[in-house]
Amino acid sequence: MFRSIWLLFCTKGSKQANSMHPIQEKPDFVLPRRMRGLQPTLIRQFFERALPDSINFGLGEPDLPTPQFMRDEAARISRDEQNGYTSHPGIPELREKIAEQYPHLNLPRTGVVVTCGSQEAMTDAFLCAIDVGDEVLMPDPGFPAYDACTRIAEGVPVYYKMPADRDFQFDISNFKSQITEKTKAAVVISPSNPTGKILTEQNLRDIAGALDGTDIWLISDEIYSDLYFGEKPRSASEFYDRTIIISGLSKSLSMTGWRMGWAACKDPEMINAIEVLHGFTTVCTSTITQKASLLGWTPEAEAAKEEFRDVYRKRGEFLVDLFDKELGLKATSPEGAFYTMLDVRSLGDDLEIAEKCLQNRVVTVPGVAFGPEAKGFLRISFCNTEDKMAEGVRRMKEAFRI
Image (cartoon, rainbow, N blue to C red; front, top):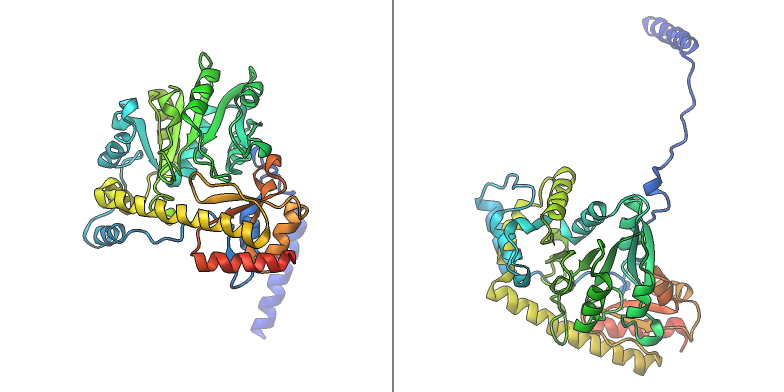
């Protein structure tokens, strides 16, 4: 009986409260302008839809193991050392190691900010370099994050073409034609994601010549700079002073999940702005990662990088040859990174072709994910063993009914 009286009391109290304070409808959630239109990339969308036992030609994820000496050092640091916060821009010894990689800049360690992967460094650089309405030049085809970072900073993406009919090589005339009074930043990447192409010294000199005398920032994505199959790529910072270098160890030492990146710049005001933003958004990169990364330029690390280059070079050659022999399709010859662009224009729409592959348990990325210039191509990653790649091509042949 007591329970019944208590329930009645609660019900009456609730009705009275509702009559005194009528329930208001929850207003619709409205995204801030800078977030509108942002969606997961097609790369991620195809990857998330992969069927079990799929061959992954889609994700730019090194499959080679992180070198054992790096793992051992991280384990030792985790076990034996106190690992509290570091200073916002990173431990001094690591910043000095990174600065030494750019001797032409004569950088002090204060010219480097250690970040949670190169993606954070890139986002910070965009937010510090551009303002509302500023235009940012970026390659077509290019990594989708450039467009997203520009929109988050409320800038305007403008594309310069890397023409498919010229094997996705840099075109200085097209680059120059896109520069306006509103241009505040330009992005280059070498080696390229998605094409695997490298900007030549002359390309970089031409870019510097086009930007000289302006206040345009050059954001140079050099995350793949240690993965090259011929001569080592030159840094854009060798030719243009207002360059923000974005790089890290994720690709060169298979450390994607360790989140070890950096921004480097000789302009003290720009690098200070990046440091302040990084401090508020991230505080600091993992202390364990930073300490272990001090081994990232030892003789053992350089030997591992050389081994990785050799493996990826051989894989790229193997896969390009396999596409030609088994599918009768041409793919670009990789100069670096671990990607090739497979020409499927003779088969139809690249989105539909990628979907056919997906349903036959092969993950690829339609070229349109990287810009209109890559429409009719698939970006193919060769982060797989030769046996897996051969099986992937067999499944593609089955899907295409060639």
